[in-house]
Structure formats: structure tokens, C-alpha cells
Image (cartoon, rainbow, N blue to C red):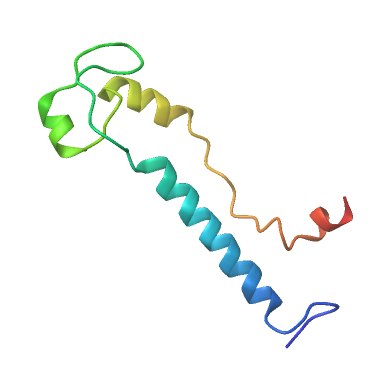
Amino acid sequence: MAGGWARDGAVNEQIEASVSDELARMKARRVPVGESLTHCAECDEPIPEARRAALPGVKLCIDCMQEKDSRYKVRGGINRRGSKDSQLR
């Protein structure tokens, strides 16, 4: 059932697109790429061997990663594609 000017299935397509975008963003943020560094890219402190073995491709030491995670701002779960506010602008 379409609502207003939308075609059938448009709402589900918006929901699926929003979920797909968020999953892709989360995967891109968390997956280290390449070979692990022996020293932190931020502070140049040695990265423990156990951390490098546990997380292949790790670039930051634990302290720098915790600081980076604390700066991370959680996005709200608002579907901006379908909100009336975004259509009025």
C-alpha cells in the first residue's frame, strides 16, 4: 500500500537503504586493513604482540584507540531520507 505520492514498496526501500547504509558505515569503521604496525600511528608507542595477533591490521595502541572511541559520536536512528523535514528544505 502506497501512501501519498509514493509508489508501492517505497517505504520499505527507504528502510532497507537506511539499514544498508548504516551497516556499511559500521563495517568500514571497525575493520582494520593491511598489516599490523609495530608502533602506534598516533603516539609511536609499541603495540603489544598480543594485540597485533588478536586484531590483524591494527594501527593504534590501546590508549589511542580508547581516546578515539570516546570521541566517536553515536548517530541518531532517524531516517533522514523519509522525514518530512528533509523534504521541505
